[in-house]
Image 1 (cartoon, rainbow, N blue to C red):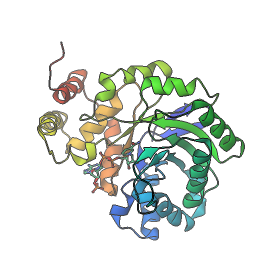
Image 2: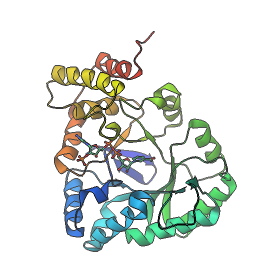
Image 3: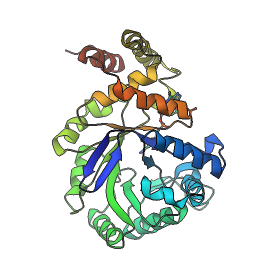
Length: 300
Ligand SMILES: NC(=O)c1ccc[n+]([C@@H]2O[C@H](COP(=O)([O-])OP(=O)(O)OC[C@H]3O[C@@H](n4cnc5c(N)ncnc54)[C@H](OP(=O)(O)O)[C@@H]3O)[C@@H](O)[C@H]2O)c1
């Protein structure tokens, strides 16, 4: 599979596998290991996690599977995130969900991720969401410490708007390697707010989460998803492909910013279908019909 160079010394597979829903798959550690190996046989070597997934337990689930075959670790890229403090029975005194990017919290969460994932380094640590109280000097110091200690190799962000990204970047010598944002034919905010052009300008390769809009583009649940799926189906027929998922992935691949979609499926055949979509080509007209179906208004 095509590799995407993010910075010197860091390449991701073009498709990434997402581990947010791992608990839903009800896999034993041995089954999860086998599933991971099958994914890697498809050429996908980059995996996306976060400290909070599965009520703070998905990293540990992955770590238990990796314990069965520690040699696999070196062949993978592990991306994880910190910063969001969700409401959880694990922290009963916490009163609201909020974001914490204080120096010690970042370090503590990164170290927890290392323990949970049973690894001694994280390839990329992302700040999960921007925060109004994020102190960029503190963040930069935390990045330096984690980097110097060899605990984290690279840093990036998620859900940052372009001004959030530029602000943080201006405080750290570490090149932020990616911004993980929601992009799909349903989620086109980053086309509308100029972020996609910011990515192009700054040579940032975005990771795209929820490519199926949480499944809404498979089973439409509202008028907007129905409108988009109708067009996706027409285009699937025109391209002679057997499902809208392949059209969605192809739509993401076509954008010049080199979008790296995160496939969140627990089914190997569905992951393979996203790989198959790498060879699918649509026209500019077809791409634009999908965008227009999403916005609901014709291009001027
Ligand atoms: N940074 C952030 O704020 C953020 C937020 C959300 C997610 N993420 C990351 O993005 C990853 C993907 O997000 P997501 O799981 O919401 O992605 P998604 O692709 O929008 O949704 C995946 C869901 O759609 C279902 N699905 C049905 N048909 C599918 C097909 N043909 N291909 C793929 N999925 C299909 C899957 O079920 P089956 O398992 O039954 O196939 C799964 O429940 C997550 O695992 C996480 O790593 C990041």
